[in-house]
Image 1: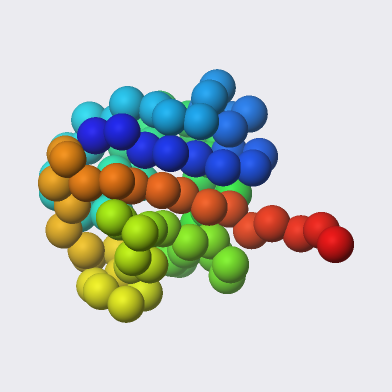
Image 2: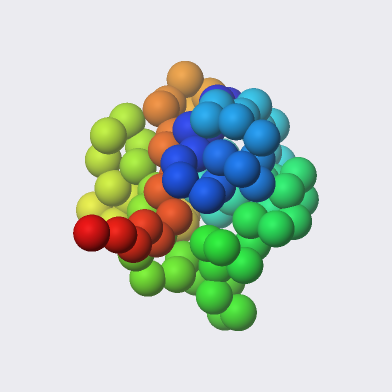
Length: 90
């Protein structure tokens, strides 16, 4: 599955689009695999309770997962998966 990452996550992952082969079919499985691949990303996106940090957004085919099953949302390899970290600025 191709995952697009934005802002500081690009630096951590080494590019805008990365190939992730999750061990399951949920958003959480994709993010877990990304944390395995890029350990730095965990503290950027997850709280200690393994929930998304405030203002971290995951979009599947342009739809925010908060409007679906959140981290339990099922994804397919053909889905467009986008991960946005908290962004500050003015």
